[in-house]
Length: 174
Image (tube, rainbow, N blue to C red; front, side, top):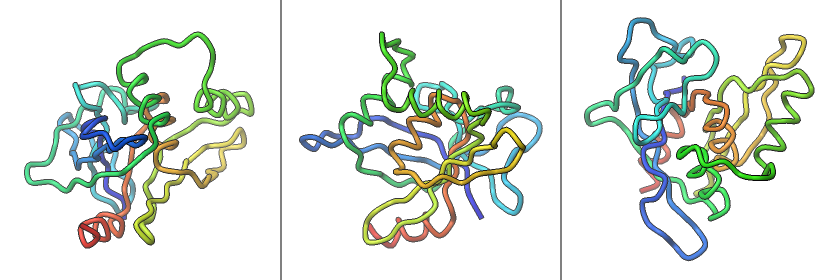
């Protein structure tokens, strides 16, 4: 079961060449529910009220943080943090960056990024999956680092989900 999350803050503190981002549990505030089958719903908006989890068919949905909801930090590299921050702030760049290249490749091949899922936490390392619908309608799951997945998710305005087992493991990992 996956829980929908939002990117709460891009920068909690600097650690030399790393940044810490935080994901927080959220729930829909408008009519309808787009939670994954069998899962509880959370997250989608980015800090400052921007949509990080809208995606196709999700744009009318708004989210609010769950009071006393679950949250956890992820340590990411500075380039990924800058890419996420740039996307959250809508700052244009002159040339496509690596995350833009992957988005362009997915679209050029007829695919569409539907969501991302933080799928596992092992040995203090988070794992993520890009959920891509290919040109034939088949869901393809692509292994990814969470920071790259979040950067792509922010750029494509798709939901961010976190598996319950990851939330439990993150709580135990503190």
